[in-house]
Amino acid sequence: MKITKGLLVFGVLAVAASSCFDPPEYPNTPSINLAGLEFYQEADAIDSLVLSINFKDGDGDLGLSSSLEDISYPFHPKNYYLENNGNLIAVPTITKYTNIPPILLINAGQTGKLATNRTLDKPEYASKMPEYIYPYTCNTYIFDTLYVERGDQSTFDATYNITDTLRSSNPENPDLYEIKEIFYTQKNPNYDNITVDFILSNGTELDWETITGTECGPSFDGRFPRLSDENGPLEGTLRYSMKSEGLAIVLGSQSFKLRVTIKDRGLNSSNTIETDFVTLEGIKK
Image (cartoon, rainbow, N blue to C red; front, side, top):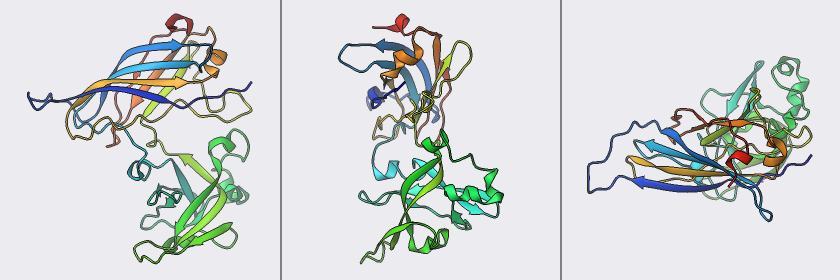
């Protein structure tokens, strides 16, 4: 069974405090409550489940853009790992240039070689990493391009697939090594700013990334865009559209509920809300 998922689409109605009256005082940690849940099924369109939530946030730092700032640490997509005396040390990335993939961000004191699928051959790490098989080939072992700055070349050696080097005439832009490997990675929990879990009435939580048992797909966690350029109280309604040909196939007539949280750019997580148990037919529009 093949399930394809469309892009997540966001609709936002946000109201910032006006200078004509005293702004409301909200905590800087966002708070949310449910505004609605609707299912749309049309003959010539991909099915969509639309979640509406009301939000309040004291400093208005809600949303992430596609700018370099919002895809670099701490909002980078995934962590890489260093082998270090039998331990695995998580390492983030930064994105400095629009035309160059992420660059490894080594902090002071972090040492070791980049972990790849070959790390499994080392007894001291084999028990700390999953096997190189499905479903871990979906999001744990990723064939990827990574750039490493000249000062961090101790993180690899001649056994790695070094495909290119980039040299710059600008001393502020360091030389870079381009490495292509099957890296051992983990998704950065701060990359997405909205988390949506699907729970069936029997208590089972659906894993959309591996639900077919044969193919890798995306989850329904995602990002909504920046809601304001101002620093101050913000409230409004966020409409989050989850599009997939698999919604009706997987859920059918089953009863399910959603569990939802959002996160701001200060990495503050909101309260968790849950919908009632519903069926697609019961919320169909």
